[in-house]
Length: 324
Ligand SMILES: Nc1ncnc2c1ncn2[C@@H]1O[C@H](COP(=O)(O)OP(=O)(O)OP(=O)(O)O)[C@@H](O)[C@H]1O
Image 1 (cartoon, rainbow, N blue to C red):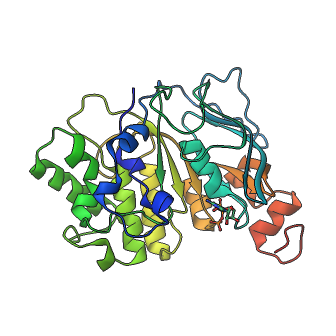
Image 2: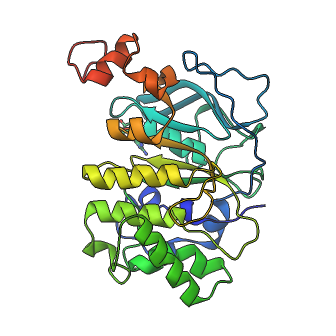
């Protein structure tokens, strides 16, 4: 069974090159295709040694990419990418520009099909793009780098879009929730503004608010995996900290989030270049380089790794195996 959720709001950028978008772009069928359902919980059990994962079985693996390849014309971007995301994980994807980090997120979200290799959602192979036959048991949301707001809708309508469209909540209730959620991302009094009246950083925070809002009238809040594409790029250091803490706060850790509700995100992946985000928002890192995961480890191992690729990236040195 599929449902559509705010965290994977219609990505006009994906289909319309990020240009002007409109509610009409979001067809019903597209909406139906964007989300799948809920997750059974299991505790995480990461080994602290060398970032290796010590597991007896894979029952808590939510998403697995197995030997994924993707090319765009002559550009061979992904050349056998394999990794697993387990329930409860907060994972960062790092690597030089243009190595395919956003591409792998889109493949995981089911918005782009791999040329070769498989994506498994809770152990079941996904066939091509996300579809109505999608395996139930997991909702995957993608928060786009470009914010991907509807240009013709104001901030309130953008953030509450799905609730206005599909929930039984009253308009007043939605409006109140939108205001609370905007406040949680540090935005006040912008509900009536159009996206064109916001700075780039504000747009990012509106997009984040849209990914965090959920229907409070539902008895069961469906947990999900959120994929964030450079959520702090272009933000000032303090706004970055706000966003990093928000990402942490909605993680399903049993504690209350900034809205005073338990976090509902079972696991998340963050593509980032920012050191603060690496240090503050994630526990484990995947390093993507030349089409493959060349290193993975815990965040605390990143700066002490002896891997020359990681060392060069961590220090920003011009000397090393990474060439521009
Ligand atoms: N739809 C597409 N058509 C053609 N080329 C594409 C497409 N999407 C991505 N690419 C190319 O694939 C490469 C990887 O892009 P991607 O955005 O995944 O990299 P990235 O690692 O996220 O980069 P950055 O860190 O700079 O955001 C780039 O060379 C990009 O131009």
